Image (cartoon, rainbow, N blue to C red):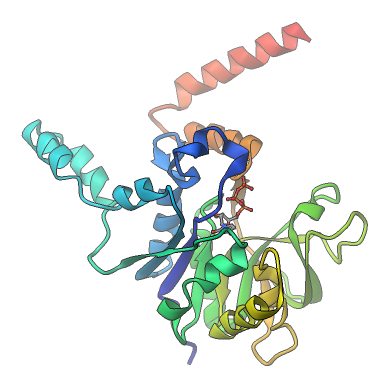
Length: 297
Ligand code: UTP
């Protein structure tokens, strides 16, 4: 019987330099796709997957994130007075049960692996999920839920994977595939950001993981040994030839890299077009813009 995954780590301690100057005072995770912050998409996905404990690895300057999940007594009283029940309902999705959310500080941005390691005491000896809120995934069944369902069959370690073109594969962690079983692949190696032409496959790892406590122990070892950034990929790769193994999961859905400006803009357009209250007006605007751009060329 595999242990259920009920804990998720959200590493949000990065500097977000690609969005400067905005991220000088606004955490990247609070930036909005239409009217919902990136972190809300991540939390909703985790909830759908059955996560009960939400562990944020934060850093200096991220207090807006903590406030976001708090109650807002003045605002709520005002909305109640005005009879805005729909908005009060909406705000409920931002609240967390007492004790369900924890914040851990990563004092230095030593890399994703280190950020995950900062949560080791709260994870203890359980499997856990890691969600990078930068990766927003539009999907009929939320991505982590798909993974939790697959994990119930396989156990082990599981990373979300997607096909990426030759030109772009060098920006990702890449899977060396042992056996391709369709939606799932078993993995015999992982390479972080391979040099041009040397990627072992086109299957890239993106920001959803289900990991065993062993991975945490692997990071522990790396912490003692390595300088510079501590890579999560390396700690997962150490598990490939063990009885646990590592699996890549080809999720069904569209992933947006909201850590980059182009990806963030693409997500904004996609999520706006998916909204009944915005679609018609926004589509008209996009058509006009496209026509103007074509005419100018
Ligand atoms: P990124 O590589 O996107 O870095 O981190 P970043 O600092 O957020 O953004 P840029 O590149 O400077 O624009 C991927 C994820 O890992 C977290 C980030 O918060 C993000 O969710 N992270 C990264 C940490 O929590 N700590 C780190 O030391 C590094």
